[in-house]
Length: 372
Image 1 (cartoon, one colour):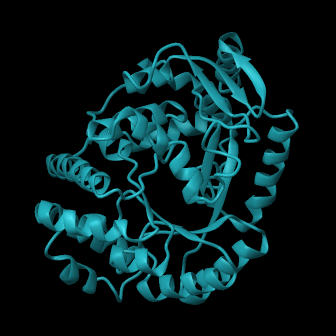
Image 2 (cartoon, rainbow, N blue to C red):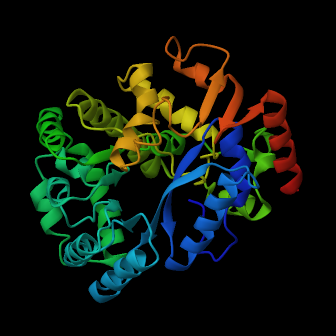
């Protein structure tokens, strides 16, 4: 998330050097507005001409929300400004989602994001939603109560739908069925949809309340981001902690089932959500993917070739080959032996420009100074 359109804060340009210093040379922006795409294009041009050290913004999506008419209008606006996709959230009504998917299809734009809570995930996959973030509606699909739960949500939207999702969650998690999940995973594998489980989110949410100031990465965050993270660092109730632990447990099983069925998995982080440090979080996500059964090579593909294929940019990105963009990470240990070795970064090639370890350390030092 490079923009803060709900809080009206400045864009998260402070995160750019953190991504590059951690070997992240490309990102997907998940919550832009129509007016933000011009800024994205300026950032892209500055990276291309070497005046900005930042990851390539490989895809930028405009959020569609509100009533059906508003949501359709925003999907059209996304096409007008040449966004790369339309982003949808869980609290969009089922009727509005269908209308957005139709409008986006007419304008040649894919739809990505959360599957709305009143839409079954297989319906979304077969209708053409390109990606699903956070396993939204996959949790429900992996239970024998999916139809009951989804049908009760179809007439809801906005805050009422958010409240219903929260109220449903403990029952949905308790109803998880591994056999049902395997069948759903195999059905999803027959569609072109990709899953972005972002396992770091439920994994981080299990952490007890802690003092951010002792984390060596804290100094790189902008002061307004410090304030946001601290507001969110509340001690969970015992009930919330129980639900969080079960969410993590079920998410791991779902991700493993999707992998066994050969559903395309893509590494994502949702940074900079609280505890999700830009750049570092991708390495956390790769480790979580290995935890659920991917080999290190498969986890690396989830952050390179898999998204390039899914987003239709594999001609230029995703693998090392003559003629492709020179975005490379040089490590001083083999990640195929231990995925944690992706953190042992000796240097980065960003669009053909070499940044050695000293240059990366200077990026971080400048980022810390700018955040003071």
